[in-house]
Image (cartoon, rainbow over all chains, first blue to last red; front, side, top):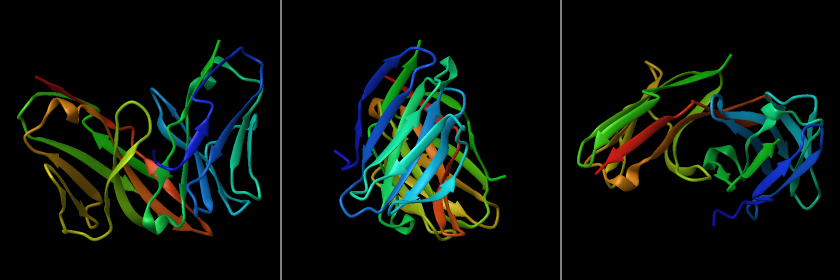
Length: 112
Length: 113
């Protein structure tokens, strides 16, 4: 157990729907990062939050949004889902990037 | 645009062989280079390299960074079937109040008995 908890582990949903992925960072870590991993693209950075504030955006679609709550857990909201959104979504946390990043076990999203 | 390129993308060897995985990068605000092993799910941390020329070792795995030529290698000696995994190279960057990792696409290593 890495200390980063992601739920749910698996999610199957239909096109056009909206889902919410949840991440609880490791105790003491203030930063949360979301990544999308698909077979052909590898791990793509989506967005970073630090202590409740958005710090950086990567290749995140406008249909996707995220937030970090006062208890530091984070949610990634994916809406108007398309088949191409099927992927593994990882959350990582860090106290400071200088000390590395810890990954959760991911949420596998399948859009049918 | 930041870029991390790993080669080969896929590699099949026999148990006992030695393998070398390559990672080259072009990343602004470079801070460190990290190697991860990904089996079924979450990437698990192997090494963090910040200084050129200093080899890091962990058992049969070792890695070194060349910051002048912008590349790193990961060596695995006396490979075992349990080494079969995707090996990910990532470059940590920081700047403008943000930090994070840029990943390569990974090397899919298969060790045959």
